[in-house]
Length: 481
Ligand code: CAO
Image (cartoon, rainbow, N blue to C red; front, side):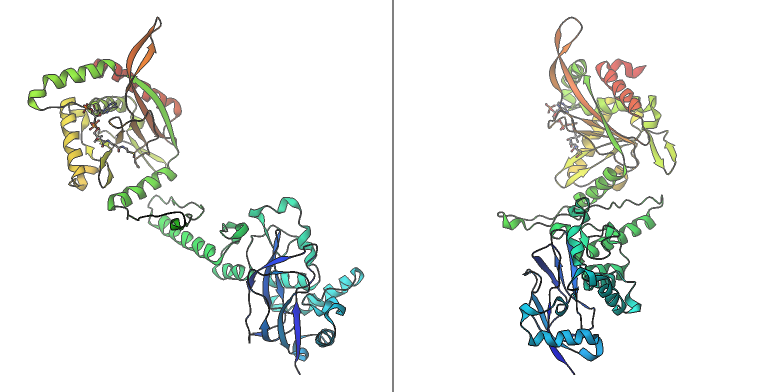
């Protein structure tokens, strides 16, 4: 025997209206008693509304986005009253189609809520007994029993400290712990994949976790796993960060798209790894290069006929080599817990090219004079700009210099070129008034920004290295000492 009954929103406590955020059944679906029909959400919680009877869905009266309240009809069910509902329920439900809705007791709704508080324990017990044993341990089934026992009002009395958007509730086991804000189907999906929803960031309204969030989480986890397997040092580089924001920019105006160049993609991946894996600190100092710049100009005048141009970069490379000799831990690389100290001095310099940033390396810079260094940097920079640098010309670097002095700026934070442990950023020199103990004198000051790997280099050592560089550049004769 079958009876058509209206399944309604049960007592949802102090909340007047809730949003339908998921409809889990459709017309003609065969459903079981206790099966979730829809998910509703208030400011404080999401909860699923289960079926009180098994049967066939004749029609669904709500859709996602609807606002519903206690008594709103969810669907019409051709119920198998004998098979799945208790006799008491069957009687109530058959009455539901005959009686005026206003006169129906609350048990006519899906909640089967008791009509008065004193009968609540008995009702709870009866409903808990109805939960199939095999499913009783599942969190979703617990939800069902909570709601059917008429305790949906508990959802509205969540303590304020548990109502933050990131600690939103699902209806499941509300008393026990903060649960991630996710619909039952998302929770089921996560369970199937073995995903702990506490670790997943929700991108939906009020940080609700969506199916896509779970999928992205799994993708990230898998790529982290691959990274850590292929990384011989065994140090994974993945971070649990929010997914990249997806914005339809055309909503705000005209756009054009341009794919990243091959070099940008390669250097971008390296820069990203270095930035997230190395604890960077940058020490800024100023070198008085007034005399050095005079010397440079003088030398360039003298060598003009030979077409030789000495650059400030060449002097800086020479000074850096001297500083690396004095502070060997700067000419090093980390290999797990071991520091590899290099006995050679290959210096890389960042070169700006139309296709992106590349770092040619000057080999054995300690064995070369300033003029030779100037010529070689200029040749390597030209090759870099023409895209003709060979792989070997970019390998084996000990320390990198990134000079933006020809462009501008007063300081910046260069990103260490792993597996090196430090990098020197050079900004544009400027004439500044410097107090000499007696009066202000105009001096040409060169900003030096030294980023260092704090796992290897202490702040004091970095300050000494940078101060030593400024001393050398202020009086280049000291290089010979
Ligand atoms: N302060 C003031 N002027 C400076 C200077 C400084 N620190 N450094 C260079 N200049 C001047 C030069 O004297 C030159 O002027 P003149 O033509 O009058 O002599 C002019 O700026 C151009 O110099 P340059 O940049 O061509 O030459 P360079 O040897 O200093 O640099 C190179 C060569 C390859 C480092 C440079 O061309 C380059 O590519 N720089 C960009 C590096 C970069 O992108 N770094 C960022 C990495 S992190 O994103």
